[in-house]
Amino acid sequence: QQQVKQSPQSLIVQKGGIPIINCAYENTAFDYFPWYQQFPGKGPALLIAIRPDVSEKKEGRFTISFNKSAKQFSLHIMDSQPGDSATYFCAASDSNSGYALNFGKGTSLLVTP
Amino acid sequence: KAGVTQTPRYLIKTRGQQVTLSCSPISGHRSVSWYQQTPGQGLQFLFEYFSETQRNKGNFPGRFSGRQFSNSRSEMNVSTLELGDSALYLCASSLRLISGTGELFFGEGSRLTVL
Image: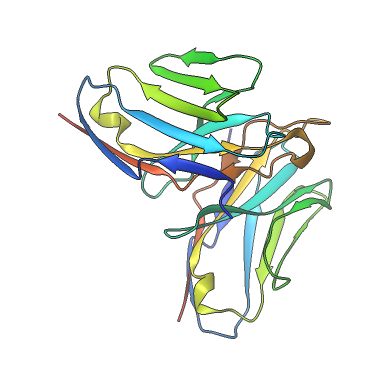
């Protein structure tokens, strides 16, 4: 079964808007939560990642918010640009599983000019 | 620095055949993971190899297998192909830490179509 649930499936925002993508998980052993960005014809690339000892992490225009008690985390893209149009995947793993990431099903983001 | 290289990029097979996909990791990376990507199931973990040993395996049937060579290059094999095996197969390499996890660097994938 899907261990990480991601929503929405697709999202359209205007340039400058702030798209928000949400993910939820059940396994409390998860301790690593990355977000990957994928452009058509390319493999996913790491965007930003967070561990459960912090509630928020910012890297440039990308911010992860993490709510450990609710077992939810989200990605916010500030001042979105047409070049941000891509598919975004959240994921989770635990230390014992190494690189066996459990991915959400992805969100297709379109940023219109 | 060259990225993760996967070959072939595209291939078409028929049901019952087998296929071998190849992956060359980033120089210096000793861990190689494989993922299957489909529109319906998304990205699913197949297996991870480190120092020629399988470290983790996902929930896939035994028809899916892999191996890693001493130069860290990896191959995965799917035998007795089924229509449902049509997918993009992604290889990812990483600098494996003793414990925990870290960034995966993905290749562009091998797109397999089973007819």
